[in-house]
Length: 303
Image (cartoon, rainbow, N blue to C red):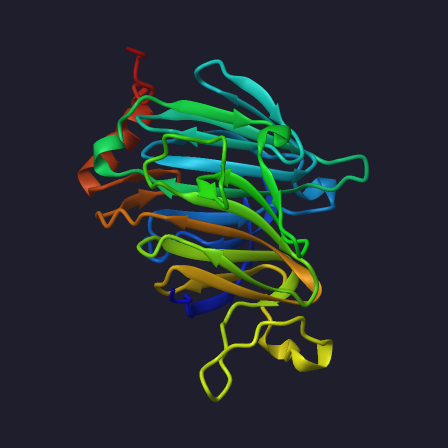
C-alpha cells in the first residue's frame, strides 16, 4: 500500500467556449502530457441562462473521446450521423469521435435556471484515431452508486470500484471515472491503479488530499474535530488536484464534507498534434484533417 502524494493543485480558470458559454477550465490547451491520457476538463456550472443558452453549435471532433456528465439541467445533443438525444441530471454521454463527427450540444437549465455539468476529453492512441464514431448514452438511473458505512457515496461511471462496474465500456485508456462524496470530517482511502494517471476535481465543499503521519510515522484515522483540521490545507471549490504515483488516494473531508470527481486512466505517451477539437499524432495528420473539414470530406462513410 502506498498513498499518492499530491503533485500539484490549481484553480479552474474562467473562460468562454461555443457561442458564448461561460465556464471554468480545470486544465486543457496547454501541456498535453499534464494528465495523459486526458486532455481537458471543463466545468460548465452556471445559474445565469444568458451565460449558457447559446450552447455549443455545430463543431467537429476527430481523434478523441468526449465525456459529458450532467449534474443539473439538461443538454440536448445532435450529430452529423443523425443521432439525437437529451442528457438529464445524473446522466453521461461517452462519445468516441474517432475518424470524425460533427455535433452540437445545447444546455438547458432546470426550473431555477441552473445548469451544471462537466466535459472531459480523453485522447485516443494512434491505432484508434480513425476508428468508427460511436456513442454510449447512459441514464443516471443506470449508474451504480455505493454507500459505505460512514456515509461516503461513490457513483461508478466508468471502470470498476469497490466491487461495482460502471456502465460505460470498451474505452481505450481503461479509465475509472468516479463521482465521490465524503461526509464532513471523515477520512477515506480510495484504491487506484498504481500505473494510471490520476486527478481529483473538487466542486463542492473542501478536503485535504495529503496523507499525513505523526512523528512516529503512524496515521491514526479518526473523525477530526473542526479545530484539528487546518482549513488552510483544504482544496475547495473548483480545485484540480493532480496525484503522483501510488495505489491509494487519501482524502480528509472538511467541516462541510467534500464532493469531487476522481479520474484515472492509462497514459498513452504518444506525440500530440492538437488544433481545437481535432487531436492527431503529427502535424501532417492535423493538416489533412483540417483540409478534409474545409473540402467536405471530413465525415467518413460507414462501412
